Amino acid sequence: VNAQPADLKAILQATVSTPTSKSAKVVDNVLGSSLWKGLPAAEKANLAKVMAAAGEKGLVALGAALEGTPELAKATDRDGKSMLQGLADLATQPLNAALYAGTTKQKILDDVLLQIANPDRVEQGNAPTCTVTSMQFELVRDEAAEYVRLMAGLTGPKGKIEMRGGGDLKLDPDTLATLDKRPTAQAIFQNAAMEY
Image 1: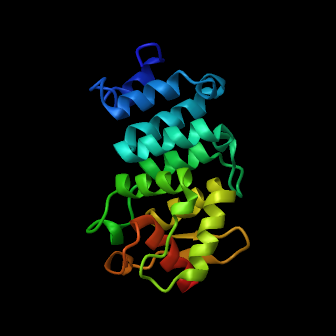
Image 2: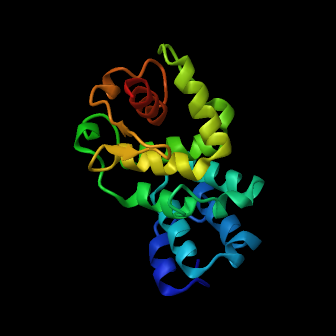
């Protein structure tokens, strides 16, 4: 981190404050990667914001995803925005007021990062959401940047987002009361898709 420009160093300093932590090791691996070296400055800043906001599990998942499929960093959503920009938006935007009582931005970010790293773990739990869970799996696996865009819209201040083909996905304000053994981000997406 010390070799980075001052703005990036400031963003990442707290994440690496315990050099022996898993989080610090992931940041060290990412900053030493050829992916990092090839990113433009704006994308480095986006990735630094995500690494600084993620919890340890989310950060480990992000590191694994970028190491295993570095092309994810260059994936774009329907608007041409990079996945790293979308993740930075998710990490830094205000959380929708309906979600404050039951979750945090970090929890949602970590859930999304874990899904991107492991699309096979998208599940319906005990919820009757088989069809939309299958769609969510395919979206995460094949269009991760678009999935991040949708999640940023659902969990952001407006609680809604226009889909690629038109129509709005809207946050179900009762989602956190009906997790049905699903990770929070999966329940948010699935409930919104079922309502649509």
